[in-house]
Length: 102
Image (tube, rainbow, N blue to C red; front, side):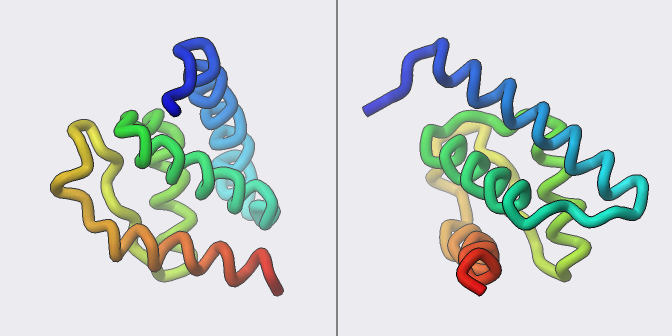
């Protein structure tokens, strides 16, 4: 089931707001709370599954968080996911699931 345009717009808006908060924490040398990191990862995965391009700020924050953890982030899909490294994406999100369970 594909979400309505209004719901997708709200997801994108919330991604940007949460990404802004995470980036602020990273810039000031603070830690991004695990709940925010998990929420951003889940939102990125949802957008990836829907073949929706990530907001630029989400892309930036995901790269910053991945660099901080020594991981790599797949590029957001602008096209259908034919060329996406789904194994890399799965490994990336598995790291967040592990942190959530600890």
